[in-house]
Length: 196
Image 1 (cartoon, rainbow, N blue to C red):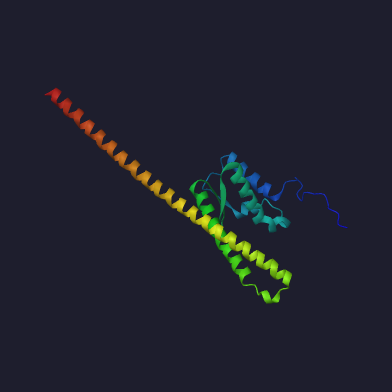
Image 2: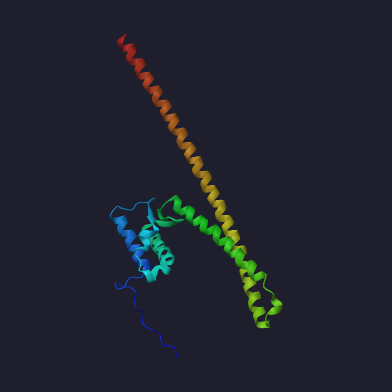
């Protein structure tokens, strides 16, 4: 019979590793020493963990990034060989779009692996299981592809609307400036007539 051991924190302060990383980042933000766009070097974050905790570094940072998104609407993006950059706004949207593309590729790769399974090597029960998985993943892949296609169209529409909005704003600003210049000329002409 297995007995479950009660949870015992590994760190003396009782915090989970992700919490150590999260607390450090939020402290820096609160103190104004870390702003969106700033880089947090790997060395700085790794120094927060004990030597025997280093193998959990990536998962701790990943979990801390998720908490940052939920609590502070900012995220972390990995900068290869350097550390993590604190991001927000459009950079965060770009990060989400990248994960969306990776997710679709990963899903398609998983389906290809299942479809390549040699059913002749399986027992009847295993064949039934694999066939069910294949059918389920095929349906999910089709639904995901349709959903991602709709999202892509919406993203394209939003980009077009943003571009159109910027163009209209520029045209209005140019028109306003031209009208202001014309008004100044009219006033100067009026002052000249009054002098003469």
